[in-house]
Structures are given as structure tokens and as C-alpha cells.
Length: 544
Ligand SMILES: [Zn+2]
Image 1 (cartoon, rainbow, N blue to C red):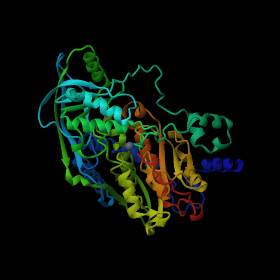
Image 2 (image 1 turned 135 degrees about the vertical axis):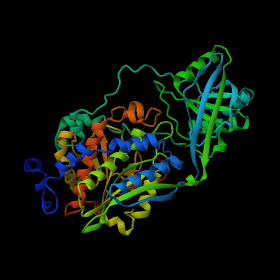
Image 3 (image 1 turned 90 degrees about the vertical axis):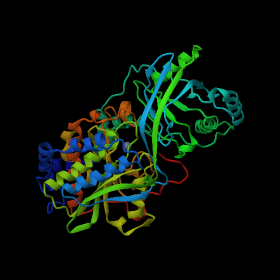
């Protein structure tokens, strides 16, 4: 430990250029040049503007997503990058887009209601009006209990606008979560000093599983009771059979935030027109209904299905390598978004950062030894589909590698919003962690704390795990939270305004330097040897 700490300190003192065995090809001034280019000529907010404002939302399979992907390829080509193209993969079903949406109350009060359409649900086929009814199914019912309840509600839902479920009570939050990691938290997570520090052991204790996947699976309950998902599916079939005009779900979040995902069957025929309504409007209607006063709603929703969206696309462009051009360093993020905002922090900005890093290297006239490839995925929000298809097609997996598998030299991913980069996790051995710590060490002033290793090949969270899953070295950046968890992630508030320019410009500098180093140094990024490769997880658990 001591020796390592000495080595890191002297490395910092001597500067980046003296990294062992890297002198021959690394430009000692490169980090300064990258910082200056980004400070003088940044295009990052312009890129974000196009991806979010002009082309958003970018739902997988929608014409918006394809247009955004084409713009990205064209733009990277304009910066002098090569081999720009869209790479098709099979999404398995049509694309969908909400193109018009209005729902309002016509009596006893007149008011516009704040809603978002659920993806892959049908439109209303023109303006339609119906009485509101609050359908509240029994708690955790058996199939028989639910069937009996629905039979009793049959007449109430016919031609009605059906609010499904009791309104959620969202209390005022008197202790909002911090927007940044503290320096101590981030040191304990990413710095090499953390391993031997008992204070960090205590601090890291509470961290496990905070963002873990979670219990939303459709599996059957042990005691014969239906899961929430099974209840919802049965309610949908019931509403279709009894010709309800509208299903309304409660967003259940504060401050008008709405998260609208998708009809999980991906088939518009299995649901009636469905919206997610802000909690405040949903509560108001439910309370007036509880007074015994009828409420009349009107809706006009146009949703269009795009059969051509069955083929979706990853957008790819390269800076061609030199003497090691068959070896590839990749960086990317997902370009697809959910549909109720413009997907600025999730994840137009991750794409913008990666594109900007490549632009900076191009502008500096760098000739990398290895090929640098930017890839902007689609299908991430539906289950990392685009990146998984790409990895399978190009690299295979450790157990069945394709020729490109051995030539792979790392994939950098950003997908946690606008906050500055605080550290990274790499799927690889301690030697990979050490190499990346050296690469990131010159960016302590930008608050980058270090790197940790992971041996997990589980998928979930974001596209970096598609690489880890195959046994390839994925490098995922951790970011300050800012408003991601509290406001923007998947919500109707995820817009251009929520991006902090200074922090994402710094992120582009860090990524450009990392790509440059991985593409230039003599030795490749260390990887797990075949006999040390962690086993892939057992299949069978649904992931998203
Ligand atoms: Zn995302």
C-alpha cells in the first residue's frame, strides 16, 4: 500500500507524460490542449439543443429517434469523423409516438389537466367525453376476488373515464436529498486510500443496493394472490371489453412530475387510451367524486404506430486508428428516451458529452493509434436492447468470442444526468483499475476521485453492463446526482434547462483525455485472463 501511494504521488509530481511505458506516444501537453479546445470552441450545448429540442423525445422505433440518430452521424461526419452509419437491429415490434394530447375537466369545474400518454396505447379517435369513475380494486386480490369486483363495476366503466386506484398521498418533503456526493463519500468510493481506511468501511456500509434493481417482476405470488402487474393486466382487458373511453393512472409524484412508461404488451389493442395524470389533478378529481359529485372529462389523443420502427438503429462513427487500428476504444450512451419530455438529462447529454469528446480530439488533429468509436444506442429504456444487439453482433461473449472480442480496449458510458464525473467503475482486474486511476489522476481539480473495479456481469441500469455481461471491459462513470433522482430521470421535466453547461463541458474533457490515453499507450487496457473471467449470471430473472 505504501509503495503504491508513493508511486501515485510521484506520478502526479512528474506529470502525466511520465507514465511508465507511455512516453513514446503520448503528447505530454494533451490534457492542456483538450482543456483549451473545450474552453474555446465547445459545441456541447449546440449538440444537446439538437438532440433534445429539435429531435426529442426520441422513443425507440419512433421517427424522432431515427432523425436524431441521422443528425448525430451527419454531425460527427462534419467534424471529420469516419465510417459514420446507422446499424440496424430488430426491435421486435412497431414504433409509437404521441402526436396530440389534451385531457380536461368539463364539469363541475372547467380546467386543463396535466397528463402524459402511456406509450404503445391507442388514441381516442377524435374528441371524446365520459363520466369519471374511480375504480379501486381490492388489495392483493385472488383471481376470484378481482373477477367478482370487476363484474360489480361493469356498468360504471362503460363509456367512462376510469381513474384506476386510490390517489397516492405524497407528503411534503422536509428533508430533500443532497444534490452532490461529498468529497469524503466520493474518496471512500473511488480512491485507492479507501480500502485501508476504517472510516470508509463505515461510510460505504449503507451504500449497497441503493440503486439496485427491484421487485417489479410479474412472477406469481406464493399464496394465490395476484401481483400488481397481473391485476393491472386484468383491469386493462376489462376496460377494453367494457368500452371505457380512457384509463387514467395516478403519477403519484410531487410538483406535477409525471413518469409515463409503456403498455408492457407493446400492442395498442390490449389497452384503452391511457394517460398518467399528475397527482394533484388526480387527487382533485378523486376527492370531488368522493363527495358524490359527478365529474365529466373530455379527451383528444392522437397516437401513431410506426411499423417501420420494428427495425431500430444504433448510431456509430469513428476516428480511424493508426498502427493499432484493429484495436478499438469505444464511448457512448443511449440516444433513445422516454416520450414525455425531451430526454435531455436521460440521455441526450450523455450522447452530447461523448460526441464532444471525439470532436475535441478531431479538432486537435490527434492521430490515435487505436480506433476511437462513438456509439449512440437505442432500445436502452426497453432493456438495453440496442447495446446488447451490438455487443452480440460484433464481439460475442467470453464464452463464444468473435475475432473483434480480443481487440477490444474499453467502452466508456455516461447515463446519470448532468452532474460532474466523480469517478468510474471498470469491469476488469486491479491492473485495469490502476491504469485508469493514472489516466484520471490529472483531473482531481475537476473533482474526479478515482476508479473502482467490478467483477459483476449482471445486466441492468445502463448500457455499460451489456459490455460487462459479455466479459468486455465496460467503464461506467458515476456523477453527482443534481436533480436527476429528484426531478428529471424519466419525467416530463427532463429538458434542456436542467443541464449545467460547466459540468458537462468538464465531463467532455475527462472523456476526451481518457479516450486519447487508451488509444495511444503501448499496452492495452488490462482485462480478465480467460481463467480468471467471472462467470456470467444465471439467466431467468427479468431485467430492466
Ligand atoms: Zn438513461
